[in-house]
Length: 247
Ligand code: DGL
Image 1 (tube, helix red, strand yellow):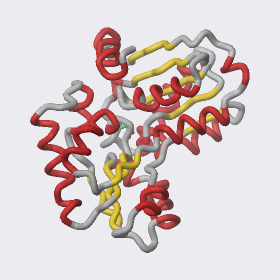
Image 2 (tube, protein in one colour):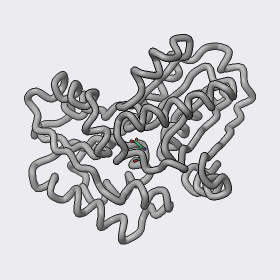
Image 3 (tube, helix red, strand yellow):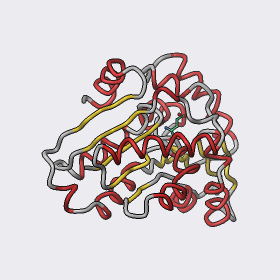
């Protein structure tokens, strides 16, 4: 079984891509909604929370675990790999490399949580891939919570995106990285706010391809079941998953 987790509904955008490539794999998704949002927590706290969800997924029989959360990956991916060397982990990182390659203006925007920007992983991405590029970082306060409320097209959600993205447009951004797994759910609204000239980069499909490459045969032989678990309100989570990805 492939385990997948995030602080909330965001990782469902990654689950959707994994399901496309692996229709027969059994997937178990944990939304750690009792501790949502992750974005403003300390890296130590995120590490502790991630280990606790990983333990839960291992107890349920996961052999591959996808950290479908940029924030938890930035804080805990190296740690859980050291802790459980026999488990395959696939993590997320803001797709800065492809965005810098696509950009002609050499001005790239990244929207992600504070913790993602504070982690060492993001610093190392900047050093490796963005030497000759201006990288504009925005946290988008309130957006994760709006998506948790499944407000994908509301006036308030649009106002957050306009507040955060319009200044980046004026500074010449021509590529925008979705550095939080919640954000693909508002991609149509982001496209409206940014206009056609800005390329949007979502690492979800690439992460799903990575899962396809790393998962073992044992994962493959399932019945294609999807199990959804929330550490918060289970009924609410099932309704959210239905609204967002039709599960
Ligand atoms: N979806 C998560 C990410 O990719 C974080 C959302 C949160 O702040 O909980 O970073």
